[in-house]
Length: 142
Length: 142
DNA sequence: CTCCTCTTTGACTTTTATTGACTATCTGTT
DNA sequence: AACAGATAGTCAATAAAAGTCAAAGAGGAG
Image (cartoon, rainbow over the protein chains, first blue to last red):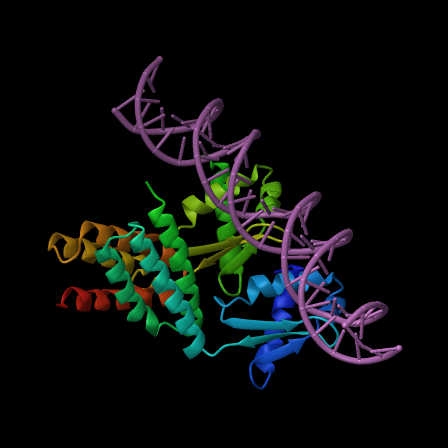
């Protein structure tokens, strides 16, 4: 099970976050890059692909002297519903574009607000994300 | 009884899986192809024909640098995909009773067969069961 | 032999990772 | 206020996988 550099950095950060008191860490990009002996933009890459909102994280940063990158794992109530809202409005959009019927969109929204809401948060976020992709596929079919 | 290349690759992978601690292996497509001296897509062929969900396997993969294919065997107690089939035919039944439109049922079935298929089995089964309950609620609404 | 199904192959596509040059934005000092 | 230095972000090029698809081949059943 050999992992890529990106995987290792991801792992490292996730451990730090879980160990932290408030599920939130602050790092310096260059420092981390040195730890893993890579270019700084690699860190940016890892953060932007693996610590997205969809995955349940929020990041903030500041440039310049005393700069930092803060990653926080959000705790579901807030975040989970952001993703849900986003998905619901995406479905509305599809309906307005006549890619989905009213019946389809109503059903979907009902499922999203009941069936899927009971899933464990980490799968729920993944599910919503996957659902969006699959919907795109569906409406683009012939 | 001459065994084909595909058969031999299948055998090889199954032995590896059974020997593994957690009934799960990770391979690199090119590497395996080299071992068997064939083109990489042959491996894809074997995996997609012999390690299906019906057979009790789940596969995940990643492209790009340090990519991999992971195959895991799960125990389909009482049939993992039985739950899915049951759900699909339940949806058909609802459609025949005009509780769902064709559009709704098509969309649902599409989601069931693609979106939800690559979730971890234990959640998927739960999701399918939940989905059925929620559908009953939905069609009984006014 | 003929047809059909399963296998094998390879050209082309898509996704993911890594790197580095260039840009933007802070902080602190003069 | 202007500048210098320290950070982080962006983007595009390159490489390293895996996926797709259709054409060609091989073996059996009739």
